[in-house]
Amino acid sequence: MTQPTAPVAPPDRAEIDAIIAAHSGLEGPLLPILHALQDAFGHVPQAALAPLAEALRVTRAELHGVISFYHDFREAPAGRHVLKICRAEACQAMGGAALAEDTLRRLGLDWHGTTGNGAVTVEPVYCLGLCACAPAVMVDGRVHGRVDAARMDALLAEAGA
Image (spheres, rainbow, N blue to C red):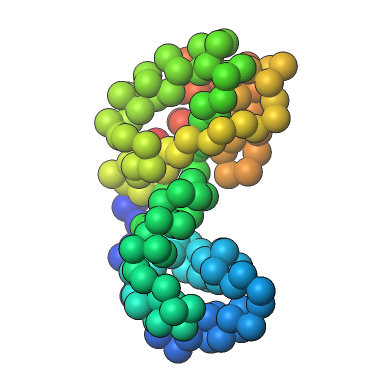
């Protein structure tokens, strides 16, 4: 049985400030800063929004708009494993919608949700480039094609869900 994850320590303000300073001289620094924050903390922490907004002279609403627009940014830490289910047309046509609905229902999650034991976060993705082998999913950066319910069960069991 998988143990629950330990509580995540709050992000260090000095580290946040250093990340912002390291990228603020770039042309169009917002996305590089958001990527660097997520690389450092596993998500874009709320504690980074005020200093980031101040440094770039944008509103927190503008930051929220960017973070929520790009699906790869997270506002909370992900589970130990990230399952991305393709939502593009080819995968939908080959049963991807039913696979996604069934997976979310069985795990008791919505998109971007994480299982109670912290094992798996489920996210939508809008093409994995494996259209000929639809439906496709990605687990921790590894792509799997022709995924059916049985294959999904195996992937989830492997991840500890």
